[in-house]
Length: 171
Image (cartoon, rainbow, N blue to C red; front, top):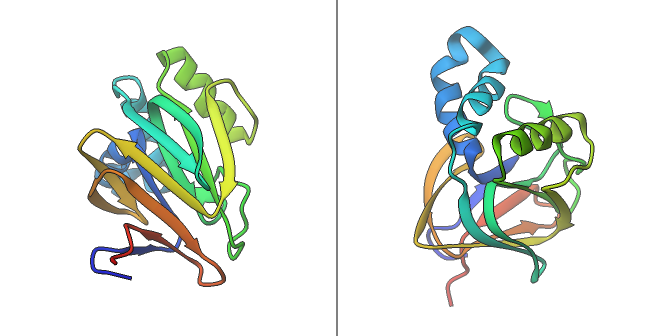
């Protein structure tokens, strides 16, 4: 792969989770593993959403304003909370998209995701590739590290390598 490609071992995302992770990092010393969910609660009410188009395995699954777009290589995220269905080592990732919606919609969707339930405004798809298209650059997070990515952002699972590659292959 060409320069600029990154490897993930757990998850990558854009949206409110990035703001929540920034706030959670500040609170981790006194809240421990609750820092990220607490940050998410605070940030979710004010976050404007990210206008994007999300495709999984070349099929469009979402177009609009997203509260969050996440791809996971295991079942946990945000302080170890179980939100996904993919087992570590599976040759696919789980893509989770939550629509921006109203504050009440966000609360319902967040509670459903935390409980492992389906809900309106929540899309879950399994796949080996994901592309996020946004206007301009977008702030993201990969395995706890903040990044700025240029759209389109491509993710692909490398089978049996336990990694997710972010970026484009160079010619």
